[in-house]
Length: 146
Image (cartoon, rainbow, N blue to C red; front, side, top):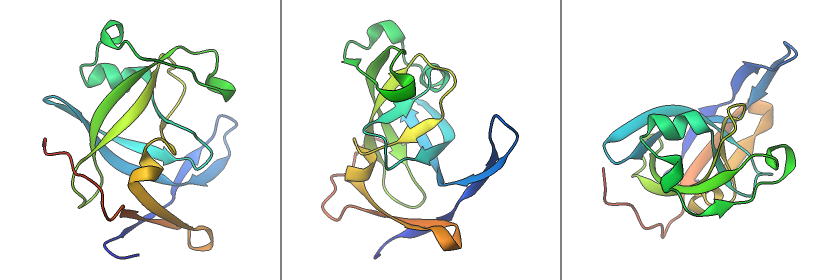
């Protein structure tokens, strides 16, 4: 991929104490003047980006002010979620907008899914090398806010 960057998979320990290796991407999220650095799971099976409650609060978002309800499915179906748009920066790439389903769940990582991370970036997984590569969409409109 042109203008791309590779990242190593990250080793984590699951709830049963097993070591697992997953594609986590270092990402800086910004809301107004507040920023937080997170490790976000790239999930090709996720329809939407998901943001855990605490991260939204750290970014100064107010739950009651988010008026767009988002219906989640799977193991998050029982949790209420609301739409929240944030600015994101990955590596050397320009900032871009990310639409999240901000959930009240506290037991979920930041998840990057099809809507809209995979519509902003091409991603290639090299499982045998335990790396992945991302490349921004060629005609992507960049957010002008820092």
